[in-house]
Image (cartoon, rainbow, N blue to C red; front, side, top):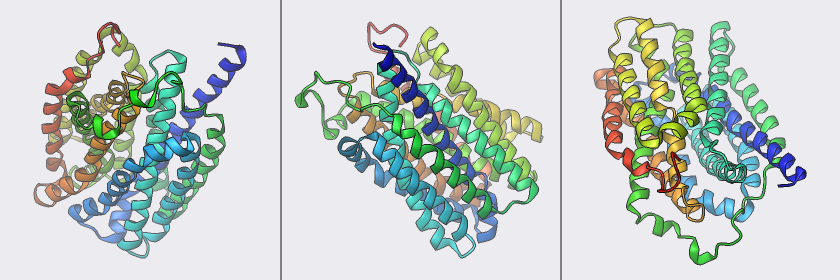
Length: 394
């Protein structure tokens, strides 16, 4: 690789980190203000869950289209375009929540649609960069996303504490996200890295949907996506409503969960290279399960916070490692990653209304026990993510 190529690849790597980080900032900026939006609209847990369902509906709608858009226009154009759409949609949420539920639902659908397309395109570019670097760094890109969520959550906690309105806080965050991401994608590399493959070598999405291993990986990712998504959507609500904390404390618990995920994603590659996917993922599933139970049943706020920390650590690697497992064969990766992402995003479609419904009947905290059952299932599915023979610990 020439010096020019190395310099270009370093710039591309930095740009991928920027796009992961600021997608996290956008998500957490909204999620940190969910309690205030809920209070303004006067929603019950089940009504809040149904409102949040609009995000998942938008994401699931965009996933079948995202691969086509990336194939036709490239990941650079898709991420840059949908960063603007996402920023506009969240700004509309921040303004529309003062008028009623309908404008919020419409804006959240657009936010979800933009998130799904941005996420797929960003991961395609990350896979390209990972292959060109020849190193396993996918989970570190996802750690960048988690860094962004921690930053967004901490800023959100500060905004709540000093009384900055939802509108001012979220609109400013959206402007910063667009201003950072649109210039950064200029440094993306070309998506096509495998020029030796023929169209016949590349399976269609329909073919990938018939592969048992791909489907098992998808269900595994779904379990961890629900584990992650439930924490993002409901930790602050559960702390405020069920554990009696102040709003700012609830947001800090949310930030702690995200910080634990960040640590797990940053140091995860070393563990994966040393011990392999299956043992590490089994330990993390048990850790997440233990943390979730401590969070639900902890008698004091410090113990509940410890549960949130373990929960975040346990949830950290499931999604990125699932993406890597789906992409073990570079030629077949696009179709397989699309299938796994589609199944995983179903967690965001069904999770909010499920936990919201349970929250109306047994409290939000107890409703989170539904996540525990999927974590138990994930333990049985970890062998599907085993590295290909001859690849070492990877």
